[in-house]
Image (cartoon, rainbow, N blue to C red):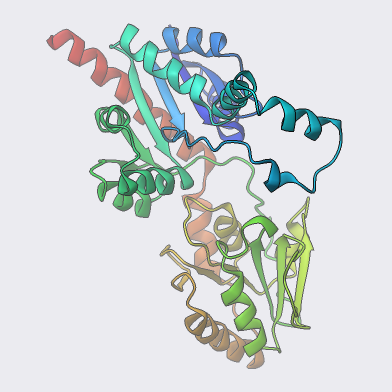
Length: 369
């Protein structure tokens, strides 16, 4: 009989894990329950949470429900019938209660309640928290601010905790949460068959969305671009909205559907991010045999602390010297390491091993009682 596993949390990741598990292993039957706009009904979640032997929360920390009353002045520039209705409706007690309900549902409280209720109805079930990055940051912030409910802290510490990267294990330990590193089994990495040649002009690429420019290190990147005008800097995902005085050697590519050409035309991949999990950009940079600069330590990559423009300039200057002297050598050792490290089947098998082990431990604990 197959083991029933329910993945709940961040939309695309829970779908990915459930789909890949069902596709590769006959020993499990997996369902996914997204939190957010694509979530299923709470009733469906309740049923699967009740009937599954293992529940895995993916990137879904305890919701911190902070409600702020509607302020019409904040949205004064908005016009139309919908906004006019809001201004009238949210002045009433019924309207404010409705808005509170909608806001709470948006942050995943219904499925969080379902998780807690079913854990009481089925204490033999194994609960797993699979930490992927931002969920760690939010939980630590809540713990430091004193807004992490004690019942949530207890639930976490009593569950099995897995994290996608070693630095997340260290961060969780600082809050008294013991976790084991189990890398995320991504299945859609861009792996070139042959390593493309480096471009004639040294080119640095980095992921910088418009919505979180500082979080993804844009100030340090722009400082490096101004210091090293010989290097072309290309930023993908964002269009550079709100960035004044963009240097001539900087390009904002916006959203790129197929990244192959961007990686192929790069010399160096940089990811200076304030907080991270198991980055696919780092994986693909190594798989393309490019030198990689990262704000976390990984094998075969250059470490630069987040926001340290001086160290970034130093590393890029050294690579520029290599470029001038005949070309930056391909990061072949990094590529070979990445081909092994990011193997999706191996990572998926490792995750399944941990989940089935969790179930076996729960069964042994019940027999001992």
